[in-house]
Length: 86
Image 1 (cartoon, rainbow, N blue to C red):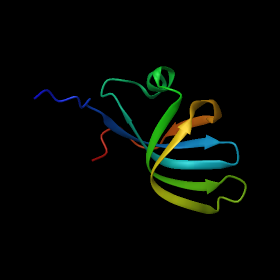
Image 2: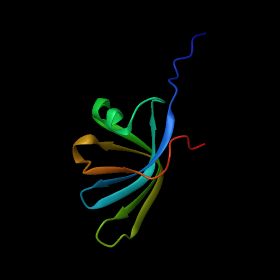
Image 3: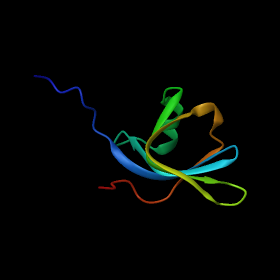
Image 4: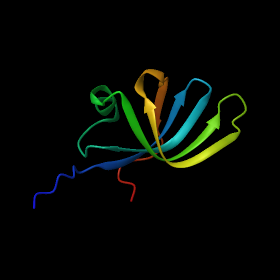
């Protein structure tokens, strides 16, 4: 049987959207830069192990194993560590 899984590397990031910041993990192709991944991603981007904070107060709002973000609402993304999180 042929595997349809695509190899991915986990990249920890901080994502800023209006009113909130989200710390989580993006699964990107092994040789891709974060900017290349975002430019070629579909409309919604999956974020794993997400921690959501209010931006004004930095108050913790929620933690969830998975959230999808609409690319149109992303203000910025900052990588927090090197690729290759296990």
